[in-house]
Image (cartoon, rainbow, N blue to C red; front, top):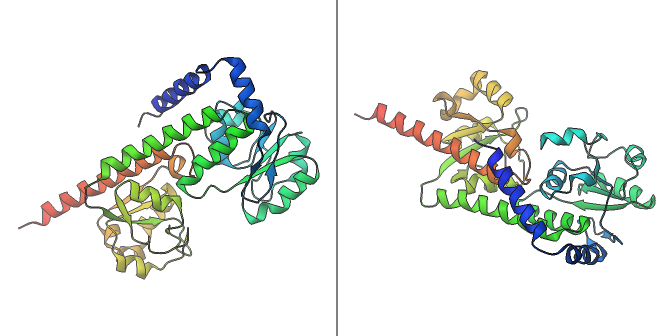
Length: 312
């Protein structure tokens, strides 16, 4: 897969957006945007007199989005889990994103801290606000959340135009994958997320949405939770056409004799997904959907070959 081409396209789109209006108009628009109150997913209101200049992002999704918006120069801190794009390593590592080290973050002197809106982060958000630092807490669990997150970040940095361009680019790439899969009979997929207890992906996760977009059916898509616990017996009973797993998990599954109770394992239809592309619902969602579609196509070919070998 060619990863640089989408990046070049995005860069050109952002450059076009930057040149679309005179600098005076952009400055005026930025001041207006930053003064507009924004209520986050904790119900806290963000009020910035001017666009944020010193931002700590404690969510890898929002950190990556800041680069896509062309606002990475404003980033002064990130989590230890941030890995994309590679340039993110130049940003100071401030530790965990869940229950962060409040003192370490405050020592960086941010004017805005962006958090994942998990219950475990409410105490930190309150501590930052008591210290006089604005916070923006956002949930990033579903595909639709990304456009909302981009709009919020665009408002915070005073560039809603770039946010719209990036959101539209991601949406178009997802639509293209969905259109390619239309009309084809869907294969059934089991997503092997964790070995003990066995955790899979349910309807509450963006990964369930990606599976559907890629033209397949999640065998546990009837479970509402994002990451439900299931049994080996239930996986065998639902008899998926293919299994998706990370590199380490796939190796363990193939080596575990108990998993031979599942036909897809016996017949070698365990496929390794790219964790860097599908590991979070960020600006590379389109690439993630394309990568899953390629794996599903490979599984479909394997099934056709198997049927051909067993035909009389």
